[in-house]
Amino acid sequence: MLTIYGKIIEKIETRITDGSLKPGEKLPSVRSLAVELGCSVNSVIKAYSDLENDHKVFSVPKSGYYLVGSTPSICGTSADVIDFASAGPDRTKMPYRDYQHCMNQAIETYKEEMFQYSEPLGLSSLRYQLSKQLQDLQVFTVPERIAVVSGSQQALDILVSLPSPNGKSEICVEQPTHFSFIESILSRGLTAVGIEMTEKGIDLDRLENIFRERNIKLFYTVSRFQNPTGYCYSNKEKKRIVELAQKYDVYIIEDDYMGDLDTRRKADPMFAYDSSGRVIYTKSFSKVLLPGLRLGAAVLSESLIEGFTKAKFAADVHTPVLTQGALEIYLESGMYNKHIQKLRHLYSQKGKILKQAYVNHLPEGAVFTGGESGFYSTITFPDRLKAVQLVKHLKLKNVLVQDASGMYLPPYRKENTIRLSVSQVEDRLITEGVKKIADGIRELNW
Image 1 (cartoon, helix red, strand yellow):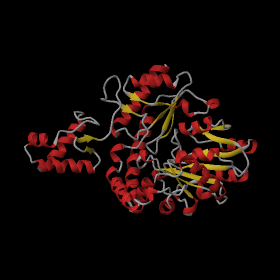
Image 2 (tube, one colour):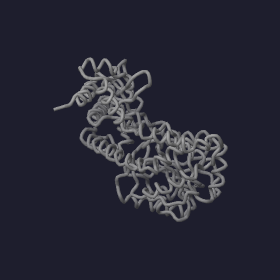
Image 3 (cartoon, helix red, strand yellow):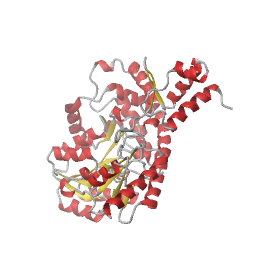
């Protein structure tokens, strides 16, 4: 039999489930709910506190408690929206309270450092913790080669602009790839060569031809859970790409921003197969921790450290000390590893549901990629159907998807691909959403 305290929890969760309490809305006041349920104010306070510790609600001082999350509004209502367009982490699983403790401790620990400028490449104590943490991803390096950056995008933007030790100037990049890297290339007027990423990966013979025939200084690749396709290279493919880079004197930027979510125990990064210093490894904490922190790391070859340090100093002097200190404490305490274990299970489950829904419901002629991480996946359909048309059509059905045409360099642009993420979609809605997408493709294509 439920206790009074348990009944309060059940009451709130029922209102969440039936939609009478929506994300972002204020919960009943402590006093009004106590009167409604005929219980003590202390019982309601304890129940709300536990819901907050579970990250289902959050409190605003002098205002009250609110349901975590937000749902975009379509056609004047937020009900029944299936959002495959938002690609951020699941808000309900983010460690707000744990990280708040780390922030508070960092204020005490680094109160003196906050009154002076810090090291451009990051706090030495954080770089030490990162060197230990990266070992779990089979990235073995010394702290001196690690740069703490304001999100991995900062590292990527700096790296594409630096002169390369090989004296070359062109960049090879998977097509499609994420918007921000495309912008870094286009805004600087750099010469870029695309290589197509499909559901089967890239053509390694084609990659060798590009390395041999073009003036390639960097190959940018997302080796696990590629954005937007969700593709993961096999160890065999990674080894071959590193061999080609060594043979043709090409540097690799390996963006492993979601490597923490990989459930394959024997999956290694390209960095693990390189002894020449040609693989520059970058990672981000945006997808697995809190995006607003803007924290990432880069493992640099010795030949790039001096130039990168100068460019980092010119960009922002250094990444904020407070957020660095909080991350150091979070890593050292073991909270991060526990958090990652939960996320691996959460997102891999979503990925399994998504892939099965694709197999069961997508029409003939529609090809899907990825999905394993629960973050990124694409659907490509016959050329006569444009992604922009499908996006508008599905919006009327309260389904949001992303037109992927902007994720290509202009010469390689395709207009018949959409990107999906299920990171913020409830498990029970994934299959329903894929059915609506499949119906939309049929309605517009036949």
